[in-house]
Image (cartoon, rainbow, N blue to C red; front, side, top):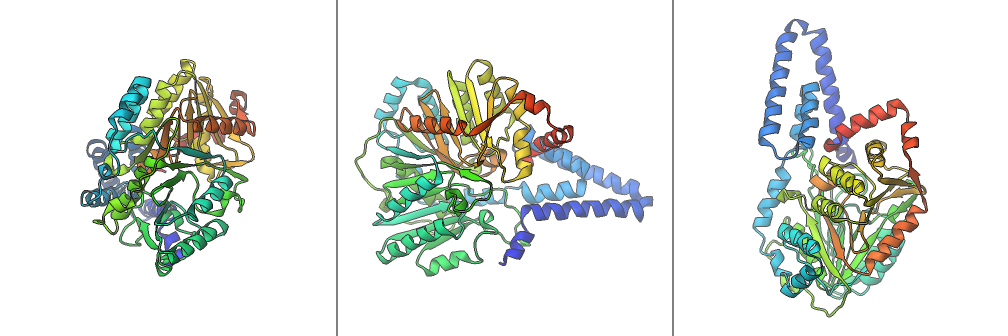
Amino acid sequence: MSKFFKILFRRSTILATLFILQFIVFILVGTYLIEYSIYINAVFYTISIIMAVYILALRSGTIDIKLPWIVLIFAFPVFGTLAYSMFNQDNLRKKIIKNLESQACKPEDFATPDPIINDRLLQENKRMFQQANYMYTSNNLPPFINSPTKYFKIGEEYYKELLKQLKTAEKFIFIESFIINEGKMWNSILDILNEKIKQNVEVRVIYDDWGNITKLPDHYNKQLEKLGIKCVIFNPITPFLSLRHNNRDHKKIIIIDGKVAFTGGINLADEYINEKLRFGHWKDSGIMVQGDAVRSFTFMFLETWHCYRDKHEDCQKYISEGKTHSDGFVQPYLDSPADNELVARNIYINILNDATDYVYITTPYLILDPELTNSIVSASKRGVNIKIITPHIPDKWYVHLMTQSHYLSLTKVGVEIYEYTPGFIHAKNVICDDIVATVGTVNFDYRSLYHNYECGIWMYKTSTIQEIKKDFNETINKSTQITIEKLEKVNILKVMLSSMLKFFSPLF
């Protein structure tokens, strides 16, 4: 499929077309069908009521997600109804669930809870045990104690270590990325993959079709297959047949021999290592884990892979035994819209609710639902020092406006908000009270928290946490604090626009 058709059927293009269609209908009714307008309006009104009842009574989701759709449908019946039908359906979710049920590999095949680990965590901190237990009951991925982590405060450091680890591969390399773009970063990785294939190392790649809609050549999966790299495209775009692309594979996972795994915010494209400057300096983060916790990432990768091919292979051959030691608890987590469990959001909320001293957050987008907002506000009001770093140079102006729409209400309750002055911050980190942290792929926005497939690592009392905190403080020194005085001087039109975008943010 050519890039022209991919762009033609991308979400923004379709929405613009539908809105123009609605405008044309209004013109026709007002110009040529005015004598029938009372009947046409009655039909529109009936459609709107039916859709509103359907959304409220029969569809899943919170009221803050449902209400913008209902308002949009009443305001623009044709546009709103068609947009909802195309972009808020569960076809992919139902397909994924069906495929998951038919898989031979289950999470318990990779790791089961260790009673000794659980007892130790319970004795050290009951609330942290409950947090770990919540994550386990949500996706069957347990905590580990023999899984050291290494934090990377910038894409360049991540990239250097990744190349080093890829060169050590002897059995297999699994790569799952939302974005892959040809350039220095991906081409150098591809060179290593080609060498490893010659050494009989198995290589698999998963990439999201929507995330690469304008980035990869047509049929790139076939090019990789010719090289000997097995490839899966997640949720491939099919014009005229499927316009539902609300659920995206936003995970970033790289696994080498079952011994080492990488995750974090870093995609495989040159802007993530500042070889290409798009929005000023790109500040990102990543993390590498070794030992038993790698099994959880291997399961995450294979779960997605088996939704498309090799459903009944022997998963045991991808599990590696290795003696390692770490100084704390490490628990990878998976967040999937297929199970209707908001794992990542609830992890964030639990951290905020348990905090006693501070919570530091870095995120490219700050588009919060009411419950997450309430947790931040409540923590700040009880004396927890909340600091949040967002970009100064945005990648999408309208998303940045939605982010800024939360600034005033949060700063009024004592939350400190900073913008990363040199450019764009893409890191998704949370640090709390010197004892808890998460690093992963999950943004503080509706798309990551409700719609995408995401992953991350939760850590308790690991030495890595101090490294993440140090990086946060260094980043603060390069950032500009947003004050109430600055916010109150903002142009009234900008305030109105950002408020409107904030209301409709669940739709983006």
